[in-house]
Length: 484
Ligand code: CS2
Image (cartoon, rainbow, N blue to C red; front, side):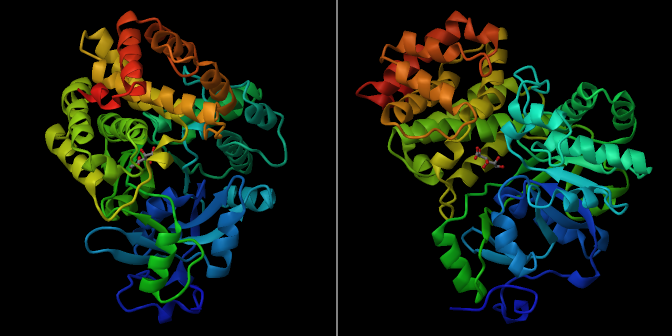
């Protein structure tokens, strides 16, 4: 059994391992991140690691809102962990930017202390789509149990918004400067949505002064994040132990490609971000729309259709020629048509690059991981594209296939009694169990989900017919006919 990765053992790591290029002891926490899952550690913490040599004041305090797992794994490792970039020539890095891990319910006072630290300059978040607790109209969902809990002003909030509003209130009261707040989740206009939710939360608490202070002082840049990051599995642990020469309780992996585009409203932090390779631009929306619709829309389609056809990973689904050709046509013909002129983006080349990334044989990205939280992902990834296509009179037959495959995925999980990973799990399980196999009736049941399908799309005859047709084909004896 090899020694555990930590400050004391780092020097024993194998020679080819890339290590922090700065003195960790000289760094100071200036960045608090909510939701330090694999994606944060593979992406934003990697960028921070690149910033620390030039700006030692941007080390991270990683705050988990619920689980204590990360603190337990990284605490004994002094925050150090490995990041394996999986390409033909894999590269292993030890990332040193996380200086502190905290679990909010264990020690809320420590989190508030960080939030009111005068040196705090950046707050970021990866809490997944559902963590924003928004309604289908992108308002703060004030009926959400966790939002209701947080609006009562508890000692330990549960939601990102609850933590932010209370943290910002304390900063305002103490006369401290406002940090930049960076949403890093796959939502279109993520910064604007978080700003609106935070303002609505402050207003719902009757704190008009705070809402005004936030509106005037706090910057919420939009950002587009991109890097394919499969969940940590045993194969990764074994691979990392071999390449590192030390044991690591929780390594992470991703593809070599990584991109972070941030709206150019970072103020004083902008130079450090730009230096680390973050693209700062006035128009994130074009990048965001292209990425969410092309990459994530294709991903979700591949996940539900691929699982139906018996595939387990994205690379396997892409090796299925018919499915790969279908997804390519979906991207090039249907999704690209919805993008309009995307500033600074050559759409054809971008699509080619995404398809090559999906084919990466060094990555086993499980379709079941992408299939999680479909009720939260589909509106952003496919339904807006479909709504716009209908309004412009473009076809929706291919776009409807992924949505129909999601409905069948839910139905099958419900019928088999397999738990559905989705905030609407119970409703979805009831819906799935009520399905009787009739394509029109079954798809209509799903379309009645008002928190997923906008009313006009749910009532659109052409879309309804395309869905029922795809559902019928995918559930029949020859599901590949849906890809014709
Ligand atoms: C994936 C994304 O799990 C999913 O739903 O579509 O996590 C995807 O890998 C990333 O957005 C890529 O940047």
